[in-house]
Image 1 (cartoon, rainbow, N blue to C red):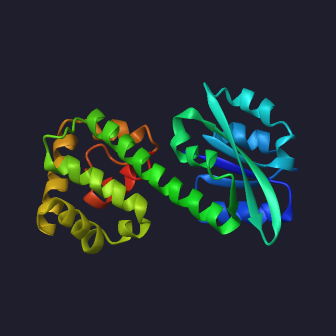
Image 2: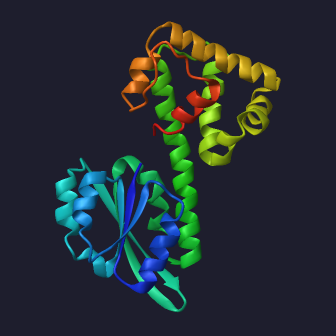
Image 3: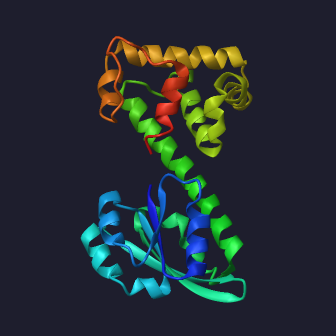
Length: 234
């Protein structure tokens, strides 16, 4: 899921940068730049426009993006005594992210950015879990394996806290063990078994290669490598 924040004032720029800080999929762009070309390349799911930037070709851009259906909500954001209006255009497939703005007609800038960033994290976790489930089924893994459920848990946890990918054995496994009511050793074993089952079916290399991951077709991914990969395919 990707989005753009288009700003045209200094205050709007500060809000846009606060929203996009640390995000790989949310881009902050000045209205005076050629945001149409960038948006066409990235194919975003939503675009947040500072009102005075919205007149600069937004509807033409939406038409070029060929969204099947979309909605618009607006809200006022107050920052240091200045009130800015933001129009949010989004695909109906991600409307749960913005539907609450229909009642939140005015917000403080910090509340606006905190609220949106939290909603983005929640939506991304759900999106990541759905994408992971589809991928696991394509490589021949199904819910009859404990490791299948643990891999989904791993994706949700990793998306909520990225640092867990750097501490798989000391942080991620214990968190999954607590959810599943099993030992840390059982988590490691069941995830490894699930990866082995999929690898032996011969589909792992082909499916991961489709996402640009290159490795020897005889090389089985480690638990950590596979979890890290699954957490990036949303």
